[in-house]
Image 1 (cartoon, rainbow, N blue to C red):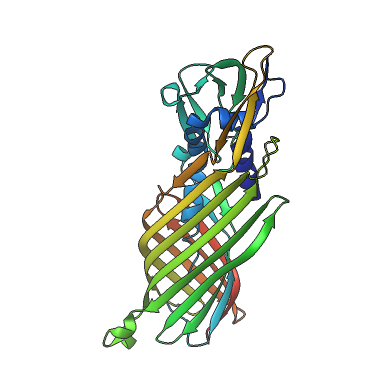
Image 2 (image 1 turned 180 degrees about the vertical axis):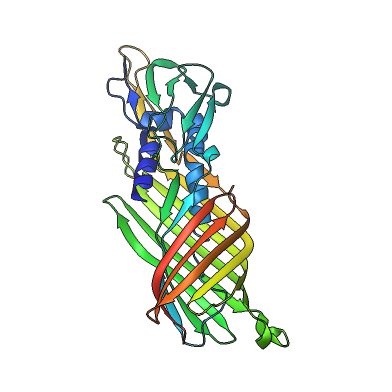
Length: 341
């Protein structure tokens, strides 16, 4: 996933490649952010929102491997990497001159540009309307149509056939200039115990609620000397599910149906400045903007369903896999310990 963070950092600094000519021999990336403040949210939103949607919806997956809660004091510890598949419609976005204020396309009035999940090639060329000698391209995509996310979680059986599930990643560094941390919890509760004659029902059924949040901070540096520049990504997801499973010796298939809510906020904070020479012999004029980007991605919320299975082996080892259907589909595979005897 680090590749995506690097792409995002590059976009937020300079919208990737640029070509400086004429009076901008000392062209700095801050010009793109500060000089195109009216358009930066439009361009960054088209490029980054699919990432925000995929991250938010991915946090809601991989919570369970069966509808049956653990007995009191029993537990499982699972490593569950999963992959969120991005629909083809979110691998590119349309740039229209009519939607731009300070920038314009060099060729034509409308063009398709890759999102962070799009093709690994530079997007269309843009220029400033008041300085047509300076051009730059929108960023290339990752060339990967999915978002991989690692996850580790611990589930413990409580009273009344209830599981408490914890996800936690302490704040860790991303390279030299960033950090990421995660926390989540889930509750799974057996509903059949409240139905008379539940002992003869040939399957397990539970309700589940889960919440996960992840925070990413990345230091930015456009070379202007401002030391308050940073990118902050905050994502949170809630999910409500009804679960049914059936244990067949060591094999347990399950299905789930429910609702996901996810939101990712992407912000670029700090001061971004650049200097322009308005006329020969006059001192340069400095243009600055503070906290230029504020995006919210919440388009992937909605009803979801998933199917999967858990396979027990060597008594305490468990392998699980499932597929979730929704606005953004995802696949999950897990391996770990499950002590429930």
